[in-house]
Amino acid sequence: MAKAALPLISLTDGERAALEVVWLDREASRIRLADRLGVSRMQASNIVRGLVDKGLITDLPQRDGGRGQPVRLLGMADDAVSAIGVKIWRTRLEFGTLNCAGQIERPQQVRLEAFTVTAVAEAANTYIRETQKRGRCGPLVGVGFAFPGYFTGSKSMTQAYFPEWNDLDVGAALQPYFEQPVLVENDGACAAWGERLLGAAKTLDDFLFLDINYGVGGGVVIGGKLVRGAHGNAGVFGVPFPVGTVRPSGQDLMDTMRAAGLMVDDLPDLGLFPVADHPVIGRWIERAAEQLRPALGVLAGAFDPQAVIVGGAAPPEIIQALVRALDNGEFCAATHRFIPVPTLTASEVGPSVGVAGAAALALGRALFPRRTV
Image (cartoon, rainbow, N blue to C red):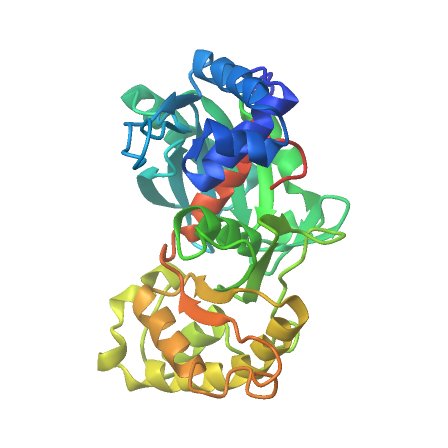
């Protein structure tokens, strides 16, 4: 087992704050950085100079700003650093490498026979070694795991599919196998942050992400920050739909399909069944929408988001059909005369959103100020 490596890059608090602005906004001028950080333009220029010298940001091609000098914008250096995202499914692991341009490279899925800590860590390290051999990514600053479970207290987690992982501090169990810092997060929170980085929420500061996964989960982003709650479980939107009942979850969809004679092995396989060819899926979508609509209306009233984004493990065709069924004129019908109704939209990232979010959270922990992501 390898010991965790020391941080690869030494950064000041001002540099970390500036990196976060450039990362989330994709680009920023020196004037904008000064305004966002609350510092003078000279201080902002000094911070930028330090980050350029460390190879983390770079000047983007100049644009015509109209009058006067062209606007000089800053962006992340694509190959400055990278992070690995790992999504744990019931039958397989999904990997991806996130670069500083916000792009997921080398997507890969690997089936596992046993989901022990050792087996998961070995598969992830194999992926890391292969990625580093290709030499197409920057120095690796972290490994993020999107875990299908909930925090039960301290850092222990519980979930339904891997009993031997219950009440285990998953991050502490995995860390000795990796040279890089390990981050473990609920998969719904990872999905929400992945959408913030790469998808429909790129320009949103306040949104809810509904994660149709094995259960009904999600994530909350308010003020541009991921909300975790007291124990890390903010976004457990499936409470009104108890396990063992008919519910709008990915597991329930698979059970419904199997009862109709459609042999689906795991959530990533749902894309093999076009909705138009299988009326049972269409009926499930209509029923799920009827269940979810009032619950989402309550959440919209509680959080006042700009948007409710629906995504998760189901393929885009199913998610888009579910959004259409939800948005039938009855969403937030009780309150639309008094408060603005959030936009209902489908994820633009698709089922890989959890991998992207896990990697982005790991990268953010290495580069950005504490408690900002």
